[in-house]
Length: 166
Image 1 (cartoon, rainbow, N blue to C red):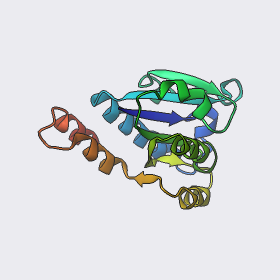
Image 2: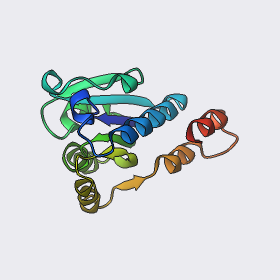
Image 3: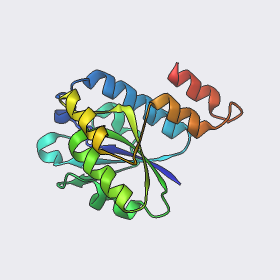
Image 4: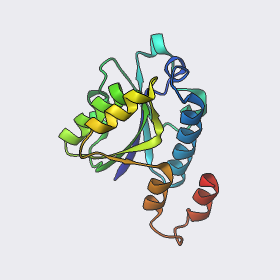
């Protein structure tokens, strides 16, 4: 079973990202694809009292949200991971919460894929350094993952997802 994990794409954090508009647009596209394919979507919010909630444009796609104070989302979501093999991560910041969560998920036996266009940091250099330190973790572009999930042009969602991507 697969799951999409949205890490901390919150009101006050998102605006500080180096590519905030692209991050939100691509995240929205990926969540639409996941919904079309029936993949469960969960999200974490880092200290929402101070950093705000998940941004509105993404919030309607989220099946469940979990608050956290730790940088890794693992402890906040681990009860949701029963029977989950593949976890697709989008979120911020690459070198902090995304990085620590990905490490914990791998350590606990999950396959992790980071959706490149849907991951960000305030400084793009930090994103690059996080990727360099995440050995054994797949980083893929959104379009590649979408077509891997479809597997065939005969999939019932092929046309709908093709429209989202193009």
